[in-house]
Image (cartoon, rainbow, N blue to C red):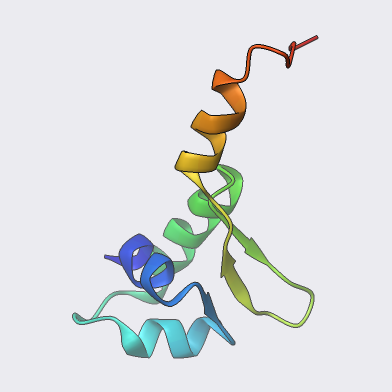
Length: 73
């Protein structure tokens, strides 16, 4: 639910605005835990001013990984 909302909008100015935009009520502690997980897994980034931005691009990752000229070291 949280992941889908961020992905659909691509960015939110604040955590509070994102929380208010969700279709169902959610405990703030649970909401913060979900955001921490998404940031740790590399799907979102929180800027210094608090803006939440969706950065995960699975199609782009597949394209880069399928390039045989690139070598992981």
